[in-house]
Image (tube, rainbow, N blue to C red):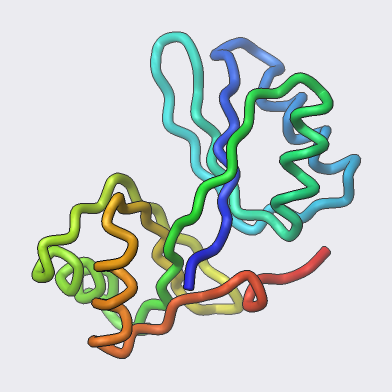
Length: 141
């Protein structure tokens, strides 16, 4: 019920993001969604890609600090308030969201989020009939 996401630590210096993107491109791996959060010293580049295990291996071999984690990816209703409706399911169940971001996949809104309460999130997804994406739902390069 979850998908794997890479979290890549990059220094806040010109060219470091480009290096990571070039490594992924040269590997023929497709980035499906991404987001960057930054601090003064480094950025946290989170990506969902077509081959997370291979991408992680390639990046580690190039000396890039990377980790894989499980996140939820929920399909949104195509109407105003879709994200609010999904988030209300989890907040109503007392489930905290560590971070979230959204992207479009084949014209569908997808809300990605991380929680420390994975079992409770899975139960809420089932109870409310939400559609959670799996790795099989993602494009393959």
